[in-house]
Picture 1: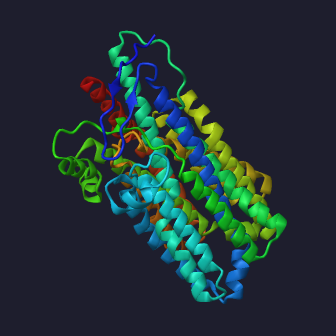
Picture 2 (picture 1 turned 180 degrees about the horizontal axis):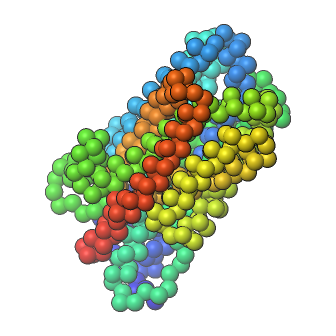
Picture 3 (picture 1 turned 180 degrees about the vertical axis):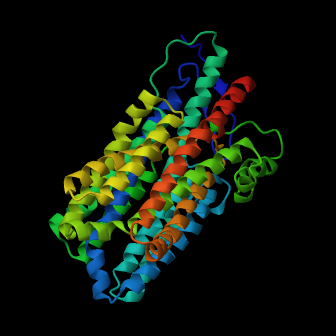
Amino acid sequence: MCKPIANETIPESEDNSKTISSDGDTAGARRTLATGTLVSGISIFFLICGLSLTFPQMQSRRDELGCDALCYGSMTSVRGALGLVGTALIGRLSDRNDSLLAKSLGSVGKGGNNSGRRGCLLLGIIASLLGLIIALDDSLIGLWLSMIPGAFLQHNFDVFKSLLSEYHNDVDNVKDKLENDAEECEESLPIPSRSSSVGKLGMTVGISFMIGPMFAAGANPSFQSATYIAIFCILVSGASIFIIPLPLASSKPLCNEKPDTCETQQSNEFTLSKMIKLQTPKTRAAMTLLVIRLNMALAFHIFNTIWPASLKARFQFGPSDHARFMSFIGITYALSQGFVAKRMINALGTNGKVHCICCTMLGIGRYIAFHTDHLVVVYAAFLFIINALGILNTVITADTGTIASKNEIGKLFGILQASESAAGMVGPVLGGTISHYLGKDAPLLAVVGIYTFLFFFMSWGYDGLVLSVSRDERKEMKKSM
C-alpha cells in the first residue's frame, strides 16, 4: 500500500490552494481530472455544435450578399491573421491569474478564485455570441464583422488542452510525492493517460463537427433560425464553464523569492526568440514540436489546393458527395482520437516509433488517394490518413503538456497553434504557386517530401529532444521532494 500523506499542504499559487489529507492522497487530483475532462467535453461539444449549425447555409449566404471568390479569399486571409495573433495572445493570458481578465471574468464561477484559463474560456464564449449576433445583419459588412470576434478571441479548444495538461500535472505531482514517501507502492487506482484525455476531447470535437451540420441539413432551418439555435448552444457551453474545477496548486513549484520576480522567471521560458536560439532543453523540445506542427499544417494546406479539384475531375463530386465524405472523415477522426490512439500507444509505446508509422501512413495514403480511379480506394486511403492524423495530433498534444510548467502551458499551446495559423496563410499560396509553375502533381510531391522529412526528423530527434525533457523533469521533481 502507498503510505498516505498526513496533512500535506500543496504550495499556494496566487489564487488557489488545496490540502491533501491522509484519506485523499491522489483522490482529489483524480476527481479534478475526471470532472474537468467531463465538463470540458460538454462545453466544447455545445460550442462546436452551435458554431457549425450555420455551416450549410454559409455558401448560399455569401452568394446572396455578393461575396465573390476575392471577398472570400480575403476573409480567409484576415481570419488566418487574426488567429495568428489571437492564439498567442489568449495562450499568454490564460497562463496569468493576476491579469484584469482573470480578476474579472476569471473570478466568476466555482471556487471564486482568479483564473486566467476560465477568463479566456468565457471571453471566447462572449466573442462567439457577439459574432453570431452581428451575423444576423443582412449585409456584406455584417458578414465581415461577424468573423472578427471569434477568429481573434475564441480559442477555447487550446485553453481546454492547457487545462487538461494542468490536471495531469497535478496527478503526477501528488503521485510522485506518495511514491517518494513510501518504500513500496504496489497498489494504485488507474489514472487516465494524457493521450487518453486529449483523445476524448478531440473525439468530442470531431463528433460535434458532424452533429451540427447534420442537424442543420436535416431540419433545414433558415439562417436566422440556425443562428438562434447556435446562440442557445453557446450559452449552454458558457454555463458549463462556471462549474469547471480549477487545477490544484501542486503544479506550481515553491518560490521563496518575490512573487513578481518568480512569476516573471516562470513565464519567460517559452518565447519565440529563445525557441529559435535553442537555449535550454525545454526550448529545444518546444522548437521540435513547432517544426513538426508547422510542417504537418503546411502539408495539409498544400494538399488541399489540389484535392477538391481532383475529386471533381475523377468522380464528379457534388455537394452531397462532399457531405458524405466529410461525415466519414469526422467520425473516423473522432474514433481515432477517442479509441485508436490510446491502443496504438499502448502497443508501440510513447517513443518516436508511433510518429514514424503515422508519417508513413500519411505520405503513402495521400499519394494513393490522389492517383486512384476507384472511390472505394479513396475512402480506404483516407481511413489510414485520418487515423494517422488523429493519433499523431493526440500524441503531440499530450507530449506538449509535459514540457511546460503551469504558468507556460497556455503560452506554448498558443505559439504552436499560431504556427498552424501561419501555415494556413502560407500553405494555400505556396501550393497554388507550385501547381502553377511546376504542374498539378508537384504539390503532391511536396507533401510527400514534407512527410519524408518528418519521418527522418522524428526518428532522429523526437525521443532525445522531447520525451527526455519530461523524463528529466519527473526525476528532478522526485529529487526535490
